[in-house]
Length: 339
Image 1: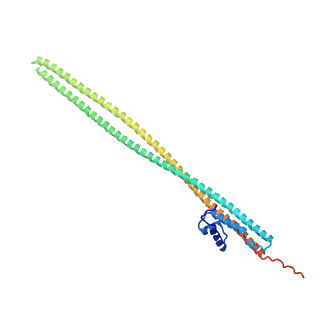
Image 2: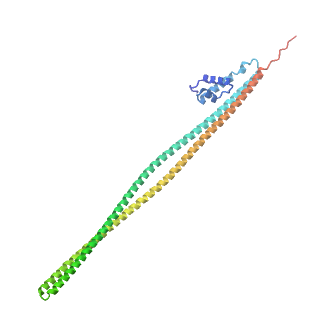
Image 3: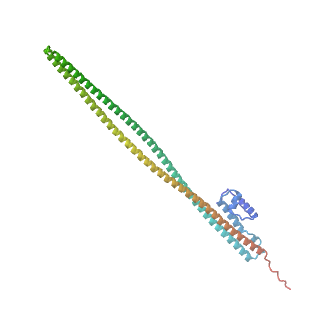
């Protein structure tokens, strides 16, 4: 059923104007003259006008002067030509509509595929952003661990220096005590030698005192040595703990570096997948352009075929006009006069 947008009388007026200009009325020309209207509505109005023209041809108006045989032949030729033209026009129009609908459907599918690809790209971009953020965090952690290792190394170096200083101080103390002991021994030996004959009792007392001093000094030396050994053991224990902690930190650093390397490989793989998706999208877009170009070419081809069929109909109309002219020039023989 025709829509109310374009009225039948408007189409008839345009057809009459086209005929006055010597042009054959077609759906495209009628639409260009009106500037509006769908092809379906205009085709129905044009078909109705042709039906009316077939039912009321100019030959019928001059049927009194044209023989019935020639009139029937002309009418049959006209109706056959019009029917064939309408049938072919409808066939080509249906084929064109079908191809246009198929092209639009392909275009819609391509656009949907492009939209899905774009959504995948957005998802990949978000994942890449998250991965880059994780890599930055891991890099910061690695930097912090390296800083901590450097601080531990400095602390270990400080402990070693302190240990060396303490060992040196302990060795100096021992040497000083030994020197004092030797000096005291020399003094006591000298005093003993000087007072040997005069102070036998004093010598015994001094010997006892000397022995006590020696014992006390030896105890102090042993205590200093024990403190040195304890300090060395403590320093060795601290050094061992620092080495163990350093090994743990190095293991954590190695694990973090491995994670960074794995994530970088994953990022490269995702970038490769993203590049493949982009290539597929470009291929889809190229395919869409090819479909559009094919649609335009098919539409142009159909338009050329339609114009060819219209020329054939026009030639048939010219032949009919020729037959009409021949029928108009036909004269009946004069009646015989009876004498």
